[in-house]
Image 1 (tube, rainbow, N blue to C red):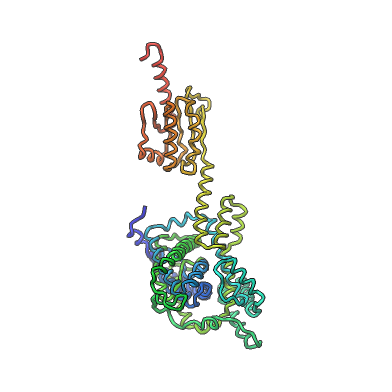
Image 2 (image 1 turned 180 degrees about the horizontal axis):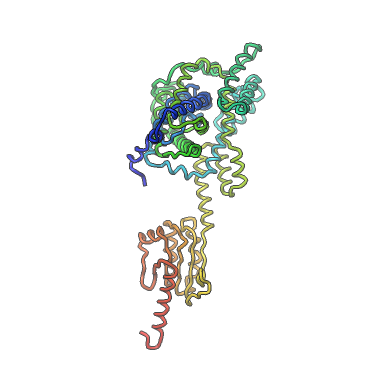
Length: 578
């Protein structure tokens, strides 16, 4: 049942309230400042790289980290979530920006924010837990493969004017451009990747992206002066640098579409953007709540899923009005913040303020970052998203049905998109689960007491035991044998003590079996019916009928009733009986 809107509204800002209610001291503030600074250092290059990968200038990723990061931190249902642009969004946002331009992308983000808010107010946060692990692992690994493929162009300096929309076409375009790879870009990309991998062995206090990108920028500047003809593409050469200004108010629909003109609010475009907005909202909900679960596991906290969805929605509604793109909880940045000592959402707020300070103070220097170095950073992010050990473990130890779901979601994400992958994956997982449950459902016909074999049943009496839920996947199997033996006994005890649940299909199947048994003149007792099936039978009007149907609380009560009926029949048949 959907809870009142007001009930969900009370969960807004629960993460911050919980932290402050527990007693917030000067030591906590110092810890949050350090954690926020560390998370901000990690977030700044990622925000730029993810914006570029999404098809928009890098400053829009920065604006997302500032606006959405601050808003979600203050209003969220998690104490530790750090929000901003994430790699998972790239596969959705890049096609939107290619088709609808920056304006279309921001309008879609705004619409997604409204959808997320509605999900939170409707208390749908708990439903995310019903998405199976193989589905999330499969589509996350698929996203990682797509992102890694997209980075090959900048990593090797390939000349691909327009990246195709479909994955196989992208691979073909990259393969055709491979002979024209620039060794300068490849060398800087390799250097950056090496530092990213090796620096954590030297120090974990200073984030490796900061050192790696600084090394790439310094190497680029030095080599361009020392070596004639050494040229690599940088943020400044591709985008003209990053504006040295805070996020400024803007109307998303006044920003350019694919033709360079303001996109406006055309109804036809909005209808097309709704599908994209829904995809952003679903992925944002999944990612943010997964992030909150990870944070809870690391910090021993408990998040409010509905409050987090509402906050994510508000953040995604407000961010486009300041040039921001889609945001959600970022697992890597959240984990970095917690490891650095975060105590409250103020750490995420500090992270947003640091990104703001960095763009105001360092914007000219950020323009020197090589595109190959940013591609190397995203390549490592993509590798981490694939979670290869977890992927291989599922392949090795999981049931066959889970493996099918995993590989299906992975393939569909790579070949098509995340929306198709999650939709098909959840449906497929549900169907396979129902098949497994149907196979676990058992039904057998016995002519002796199931628990006391030495106790004989009266002549002409059979017990029909059903074990497992009687739902639409198993209902027919549960009663098919009963129909075939309808005329072989005078009385049937349908033992339902091991049937925990029954749906309307199970009810219809049971009613059909009862009609067949009654037509053959059999007396039927429903024994040991549990609470949910008993309520369903009552609502359906199935109640005791003299000579046809009885309902008993237990098998023993049913057998006692059979004995009473048998005694009555013997007395009636005896000489002089009534």
